[in-house]
Length: 90
Image (cartoon, rainbow, N blue to C red; front, side):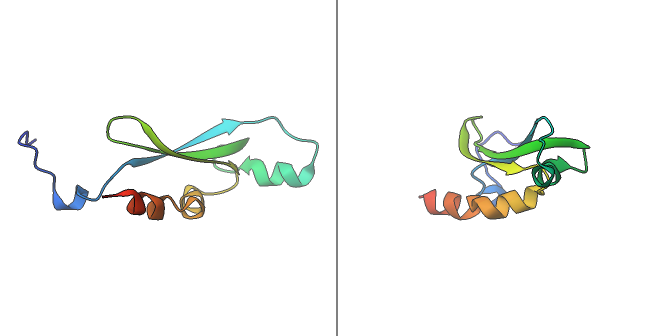
């Protein structure tokens, strides 16, 4: 590992790291809501959130809640986080 401050070209435009979280919720009496919040991967009813964490560990962006049946790629696309982070760079 280099310690001279060199940043490889592939990481020069990286401003943060995406992190998704699922928060378990109770089943609702509403069947439609139950279906939207059911996460088939973990077999739980949940709401999902996405945050972008900077290199220093600070939360730079937060998006959610989104029903648990949605994929992380969908949340990333809907939040437009890439465009906002690109616009924020100097």
